[in-house]
Image 1 (cartoon, rainbow, N blue to C red):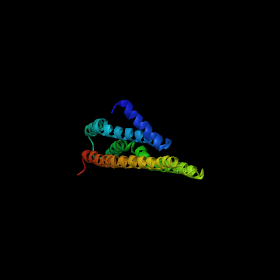
Image 2: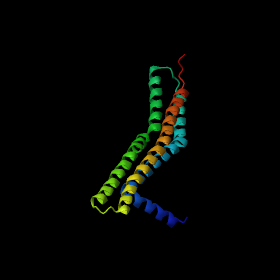
Image 3: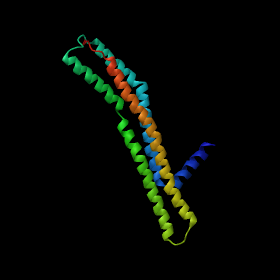
Image 4: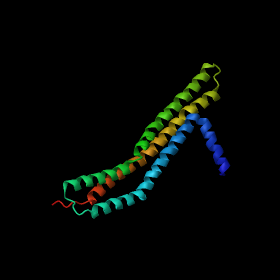
Length: 174
């Protein structure tokens, strides 16, 4: 399939699903960009952050004082905040996607009711409305489910990694 044919099929799909489908596509693209950014952060910048925190902690002579305990908690908290940064907007987009699909359902059904109210019984017009009602619903659910699968993995990794960092910052208390 050529690039032009692919673009034509995408355009036809969006026309069948209505304008709400385009909004769902944009929201999904933003969600996946944020998911990719989190994976990229975990594989690159997080490792540097952990090395920086460990170097700072290992350079301290006194790791048993009250002040050291607060510094340790601050370092762990800082790492945890950087790990979960960006997960909130991903969660929001996951929750918004089905609602956008529902909006598409409502607008599609309004189109079906308009055709029925006209009294013509135009099967083609009703089919177009049903298509506009079902495609956004499906797209919203697919976007939400796919995002949820990766969001759970990201959150679990962030939690586990924060615990690993906390465990690696040893204190001198006996």
